[in-house]
Length: 328
Image (cartoon, rainbow, N blue to C red; front, side, top):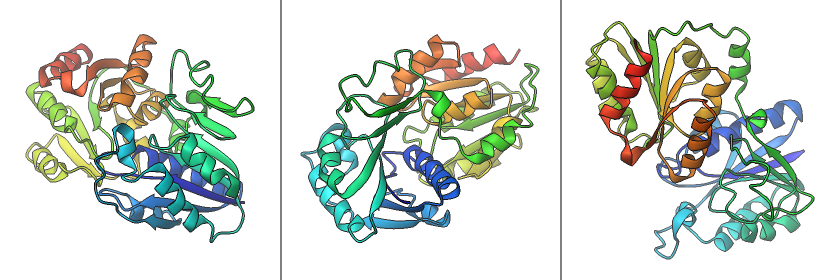
C-alpha cells in the first residue's frame, strides 16, 4: 500500500495538522504495512525535520514569494491551488501507484482534489471547517460538534464515507498506553499543565504564566510546554527558570504522561482538546484561531471544559478568575 500525505506546518498554520497526520501515518505503516510519504512546503516553522525523524520520506515543495491576491486560508498554501496541485503531482508521479492520498489543509478543496484524483485510487480529507466542497472517498472530522451529522451535507459526494466525532480521534499510541493506568484525581490542584500548541502566535502561554504567578501558590507544580515553532520560547524559558515551581519543555514526546500527572490544564482549542478529553483532564480553554471558536463553544455547552473565549478577548485577570474556581 502506497500512501501520500499533503500537509503543512508553519508559524501561521501551527503544528496540529502535521501532528495528526503523523499519527495516522504511523498507524498505516504499522497496521497496513504501508509505504508512507509526505509532501510539505518549505514554510517558516515547517516541521519537516520532525517528520523525517519519525522515519518518513518528505518531498518538499519550494518556498514561494508572498502572493497578495490570496485571501483567508488560501494564504496558507502561499500559491494557488492549481500551482500546488501541479507541483504535488510532479512529485508523486515518480512514485508507484498511489492507493491513498491524504489531504489536511484548510486551503485545499474540490479544485485541488479533482486535479489529483485521476492519479490516485482514493483521496481522504481531514477537515474541521465544513465550509467548502471536497472531491474525496473518505472524510474525517474528529472534533466535537453538536450538529456533526449535518455539517457536511452537500459538501462531499453521496458515496463518501464520513468519520465524524471524537470516537475517530487521531490519538498517538502513547495516549492509549497511558490511559491504561490513568490517575484518579480528587479535585485538588497540585499540578498544572500549560500548552497552547506548536506556535502560539498570540503568546497565550505568557498570559497563563502571569496568571498562575499572581495566585502566589508556590506549592503548585506547573509544566509549561511549547513547540519548536513558538517564537516566544526563549522568553518563556527565562520566565520559567526564574520561578522554581515552573518547568519548561519544548516539543515533548510524553504529552500523555504530562497530562496524566496534571490536575488542571490551560490550553488552546485545537487538537489537544481531544487529548485532554481522552485523558479526563479538567481544562481552561482559550480559542487561539477562528476555526477553534465553534468547537470550543459546543464543547463548553456540553460541559467538557471551562471556556474563556477568543484570545483577543481574554485577559490575564480572566485566567486568574477561572483558576480561582478550580483552586479552592
